[in-house]
Length: 366
Image (cartoon, rainbow, N blue to C red; front, side, top):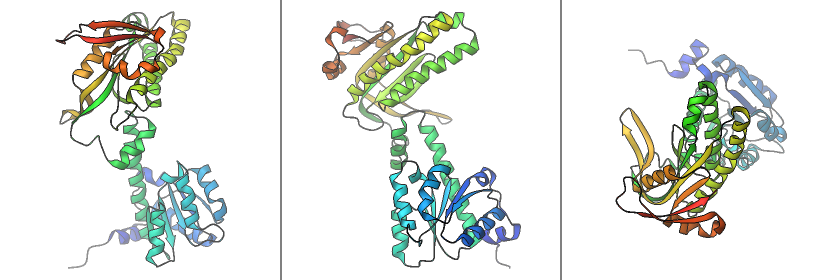
């Protein structure tokens, strides 16, 4: 029986492989030998890659990368003036460049060179002269992994601020972890006057108004690293001290409430001018223990927060009038020094629907 055909032999026989959208990814190359760049580009074009940028002057490498923002970099190590190690080190200092997958191409055989390159952030390592079929396959796999990472980033960015996305991906928790109990600060924000809006505004502008409203509120939440758990109708649910501990979670929640009101003020002014509509923001906040985790069916899961703390925050939001935040007593004690006394009105112990016991509540004018 003949031996099975290997993947690289298939590439050489067929001339190219099915890359799909990966073939449109911008490939950058830095090598002090222009002929090597020319040959490598020819190899990759035959394999199905169509977009390239390059330089044989390593002193201009970082500038090229910042300008072009390639999806993958092929990098020589042994170059005059600025080595591949130098380029890798500079890339690690840049919040964007450090995420560009980098395949090192070098004649060096010693393991120290490989380990140093990998330690500086290189993704892969190939020895020169490079087998073109192996390079094409490594390129495909590197780009596929990068595309998968980008899709995960986009998914997480629906919930948390961009500052937390990288930490979530690198630590691979907590979205895949088991449900757990944790101390959280829960905030509900609701649009006052929404029912009237649905009655007098056409569908298309109504949806645009809601998008504008949610964009303002989520921007405020992400500014203070709040986690967006849910948008329902005209209501937004935000959590703090989750998915990562935040020692100043209460202060973050209060700052978010103020910024939500500020951002919404500009939105509401435009609504009054264009639609003669008056809208307001009502907020409810509570601090306490809650269960955090993935809840749902096998076909649909949602990372969410549940428990009495959530229920209290929801009831407080329902009772708040436009421009008011109703805050549980325990949470208020955590932020008392941050809130001007002139804005605070104690509401005493309130009875909230669905709860057996009354709770201490403070009204804060936003």
